[in-house]
Amino acid sequence: MSRRDQIRMSDEEVLAFLGEERTVICATNGRRGWPHLMPLWYVVRATGDGGASQVWAWTFAKSQKVRNLERDARATLQVETGASYEALRGVMLECDVVVHRDLERIREFGLELFERYGGVNDDVRAMIDQQAPKRVALQFVERGRATWDHRKLGGVY
Image (cartoon, rainbow, N blue to C red; front, side, top):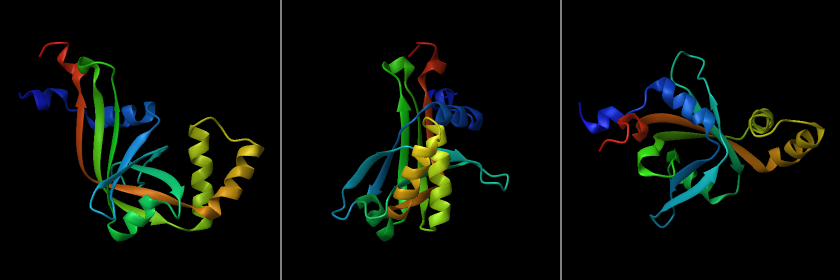
């Protein structure tokens, strides 16, 4: 078995890892050909059809990443952690991206996002109602994946 195979995460490990972490780096294709990398808060949602889960996020509708996605609806997502080589863990997802502009869907997603990141109260609801018209929801549909969990090697390289 190769080292690559030894450190690969299972689907269950990927879901648990994404559930633990809080920030995803989203790379889109910038207008000058350079990757455009930005951090996003995210939620992992089940697809409902028995398929893999999907990452969702929201951002300002006029942001550079949305402009990039309007030109090329592909993105690479990466979530990683680990302070030393033997503790490195991560997931990289190659995705097609659907930009959702329906205001009610964006509001609902905002509530789901803020529930994950600290809870929803009346102030948060008011903020989401104010922000939703300026935002879009991003649905990242996975097309490919790479994962690594160096802890599986037990410190032996």
